[in-house]
Length: 93
Picture 1: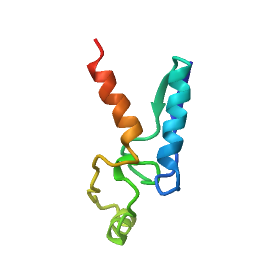
Picture 2 (picture 1 turned 90 degrees about the vertical axis):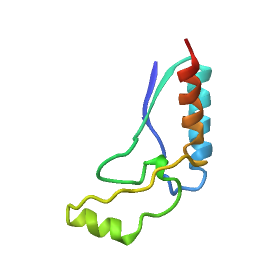
Picture 3 (picture 1 turned 120 degrees about the horizontal axis):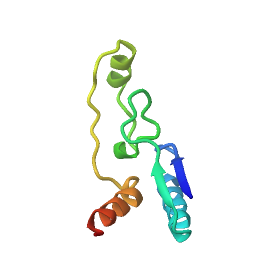
Picture 4 (picture 1 turned 60 degrees about the horizontal axis):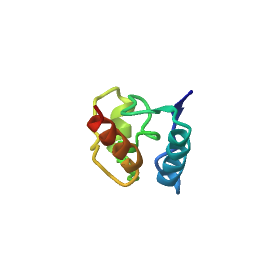
């Protein structure tokens, strides 16, 4: 079994806890998972790498005009449930 394309809106209260809960249940079933979405190109709402800050208006103006705008993606508490598991997977033989 694979839990695919799960996630939560990054500005929703409890999003990190929700991600932790889903991942714990899936892993408790010894199943696989695929998070949705890293660095989506048209909507930032599910991009946990952005954390819980709101994108500046300049970003949205650039989007409207089709201009590139680099958003800052960093480690943050929202990304932690996913990042911790990805790091552990890298260490497995």
